[in-house]
Amino acid sequence: MIQKNIRNFSIIAHIDHGKSTLADRLLEATGALTDREKSAQYLDKMELEQERGITIKAQSVRLNYRAKDGQDYTLNLIDTPGHVDFSYEVSRSLSACEGAMLVVDAAQGVEAQTLANVYMAIDQDLEIFAVLNKIDLPSAEPERIRAEVEEIVGIDTSDAILASAKEGIGIEAILEAIVQRVPAPKGNPDAPLKALTFDSWYDSYQGVVVLVRVFDGTIKKGEKIKLMATGGVYEVQKVGAFNPHPIQLSQLSSGDVGFIIAGIKVVEDAKVGDTITHLHNPAAEALPGYQEVNPMVFSGLYPVDAADYDNLRDALEKLRLNDAAFSFEPENSLALGFGFRCGFLGLLHMEIIQERLEREFGVNLITTAPTVVYKVTTTKGELLEVESANMLPEIQFIEQIEEPFVLASIHVPNEFVGPVLKLCIERRGIQREIKYLTANRVMVVYEMPLNEIVLDFFDRLKSISRGYASLDYEHLDFRISKLVRLNVLINGDVVDALSLIVHQDKAQHRGRDLVSKMKEFIPRQQYEVAIQAAIGNKVIARSTVKALRKDVTAKCYGGDITRKRKLLEKQKAGKKRMKQIGSVELPQEAFLAILKVKD
Ligand SMILES: Nc1nc2c(ncn2[C@@H]2O[C@H](COP(=O)(O)OP(=O)(O)OP(=O)(O)O)[C@@H](O)[C@H]2O)c(=O)[nH]1
Image (cartoon, rainbow, N blue to C red; front, side, top):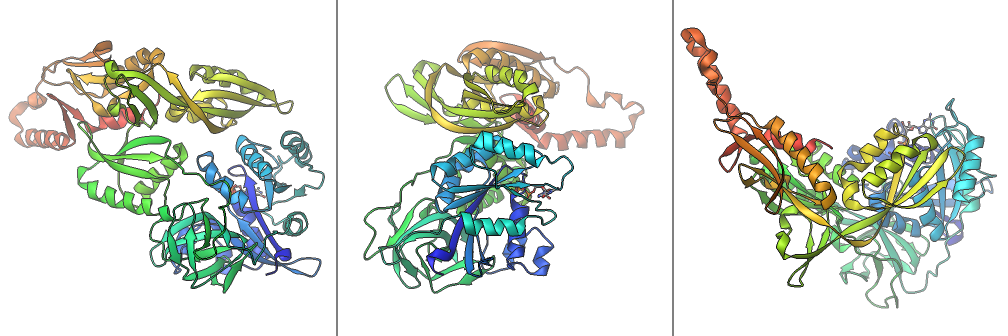
């Protein structure tokens, strides 16, 4: 396709504003879907992908469209992940485009996530046009939302398209706007090759499939290519595009979007943001914007049943094949046995992986409280990166601890501002800005320690705002803080799975909390059990489980031996799930309950 008839665009939308439904409508309208596929929301379907020789993880597709001007166009819809955890991937996907369509729910209006992505698109100089979706809803107020988008986002919305993805309204107007408003790519097909990798995934038949946007030059089967950041050299086996089914093409040229298969074995070798060039006649410099992504949030994952350890490891390895941002290494805990310490980009990434492990791989998990990465300087002057409370050196060997801070933007209706501010202050937030976006919507911006967000900030925010608040955050820097390790001890032995890194001012409160929760879950034993919370050697909270006096079988009067046996068997079965901490046996449920309980 000649460049002047190519349009590369993304859809920016807040979760649930209708991005997938709208994308499906565009596929349908351009004849990309068969009737069978229309029955299901196509772009999210993993099962469908598996039927084919090649997985279609990315929702980036090529649409063929004959516009009203009578000309044929290739419209490349480039998908962007819809969450703050993946903002680097979003920025790379956007940089593969010339334009973006901003989809806003005509009943809900602008949300924090919408804004974050729009600003990224503005930074990349993309042409942006607005679509107000869900106008079929009785609660839709397109005129009010049109003004709101203009005011908040700062783009002209006088020609915003009114649409209903559900009812198929406005679809043609959207296709025309893509042709009219998104600029054609401007590259040089004869210059040395520069192609941006904006997504990659592992396919069990083909190896790694790399999605690229070619900026300059042309790439063909059989050519030797080089990935400029990782230095890997490969031979191109296939080039093609998704329509949405994979089609093989003879070449991809400047302006094109498509896939490359080149015998790359692991996704780590085809990193998002890398530039592909030819081994011979390479580009002088790579495309800008490449970054290494590092996990920001860590948590221990343990199988509920120790016999599942190998399954869990296999499942983690499979997930890792496809996700260069996810890391894991073996870890063991006195309380929970053998498991893995895993690193994630953020909380949502963590939840996605946990859910996939449980659902797709059938492994039941215990998850320890998520933590962030701390930079610890020891008294000897060493710098350590600590991602688990148990890795933190003893207090006397620590010179200082730095923790990651983020800039959190919260969008909330007027009436909930009070509770939101209170929550931010409780979580050690430092106020940057409170801005009235409209008469009824407020944006609250705080600098906050990530450590206070990973626990349950988002849940709390949702509950105090009856679901109306939305949150977005970006990383700022590391700051020195008074952090300590809080241990829980049972009859003098540390329960490693429950150790936490907390701010000194909060240690007392959390200590008391943990100790009293623990008490609820520890059954009485033959002797007294002391539960303590301590910082170093200093005990800051304590509770006691009194000794047990009664014999469990004492109730079985009348010598009913079968009843007695049953009781003993029950006790035995219960024991299997007990964990021994020093001399005390704890039911596994105690950990499950506490690790799941939120404060
Ligand atoms: N009434 C109405 N509902 C719609 C419309 N478009 C989408 N929806 C519904 O809104 C919900 C969210 O739509 P999706 O297309 O999944 O939204 P999304 O933005 O892709 O959401 P994520 O995939 O979670 O990011 C679904 O229940 C859709 O059926 C519309 O025009 N009108």
